[in-house]
Length: 290
Image (cartoon, rainbow, N blue to C red):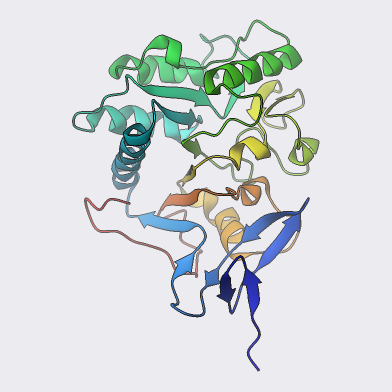
C-alpha cells in the first residue's frame, strides 16, 4: 500500500524532513503525487564560474525588476567570499542596469575597519559600488568602531529603520555562500547562534574562522527573505553539498537550516561542487535565465 505525507495541500509520496525548533531543517526531495513536478530548492549546475556568474547577475536583475514593478525599492543582502568577485564582474555588465532604487545590506560582516582586507563592505566598495549607480545612503553597513554587541544592535536598528518595521525585515533577495564546514553567514556548526529566535542580527565573538568578532543575520531573518540564493563553487564543497542536499548522518549543518518560509531557494553551483550529487539537478544551456 502506498504511503503519503501531506504538506500543506500537496500530497507527496516521498520526502526527507528533519525538524529543528519546529522548523524544517532540510527537505532534500519532494515529488508531488499528481504531477511529478519537483518543488523545494532549485539546484542549478553550470560548467564554469563564468557561466554561473552571468546567470546570477541576470537573476538578481530580474528579481529587482519584479520588486520595483510593485514597490518602491529592491532590497538585496550581500555576502563575502567568491561572491564579491563574481558580482563585481557580472552585475555591472547587465545591460541597462539601474540600481538607484536598490537597498543593499550585508548578511554578515567582520568587525574590522573598512580599510582591512577582511572587510566585506570594503571589498564591495572598491570592486562593485563604484561601478553601479547605487546611492551611498542606500548601502547599509555596520559601524566597525563599536564593540561587537553594540555593533549588532546598531545594525539591527539600521535595518528596522530602512524597512520601517519593528519586526523581522523581509529582504527581496539574499545572496549566501557556504563554507566547507557547512556554515553560512557567520552561523557555524554547533554554535549557540543557531538557536537564536528573537534577534534579527546577532553578535559573535568566538567565530571559529578568523576574525573572531563578527555581526550576522540570524536564521529568522534569513528565512524571512523572498528569495535566497546560495552560490557554491569548487571541488572542496562537493562532500558537504551532497550531505546538505541529499542527507547524511550527524546534526544538520547551518546551511541546511536555510529554508525560506514563503520564498524561493536556489543553489547555483559549478560542476566541481556538484561532482558528488546523484539527485536531479538543472543544467541550463548558454544564456538561459532562471
